Length: 171
Image (cartoon, rainbow, N blue to C red; front, side):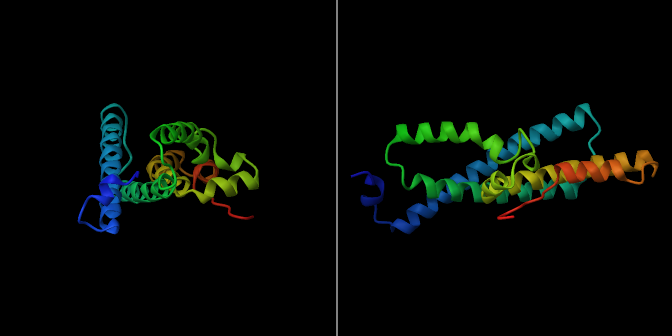
């Protein structure tokens, strides 16, 4: 039998699943927070960072939401996988495709409506767009201020439309 740890413990199956979920979500949150913090420190040391404390708190909240959502999606998938070699192969394929699904490599608006619908079903697509919106907002506000109304805000508007969250589900 596969569930030796679940069968051999006096705890209920729900408690074990919730503890696995909590541990996975917390470790994902901690790892992504460390990486995000390192990135923000590098930005702050080498460039002008146009993020305030409120923006960093928003990023942490989005990071937590993303960690919980991705853990939930992966736990639903892992339930059906019985062998570790199958799990390794699946996550290898998933990591290769995830950049396209979340719009990291190519903005989603470049794809057809059908592909956008499939990509937007995954919660990570929305999380990535929210992070991008927060990171771009300060820079775009600074650019708009530097342009001083010369273009009537058209440049910033075009960038926001190209890179901000625009989810399309089923047309």
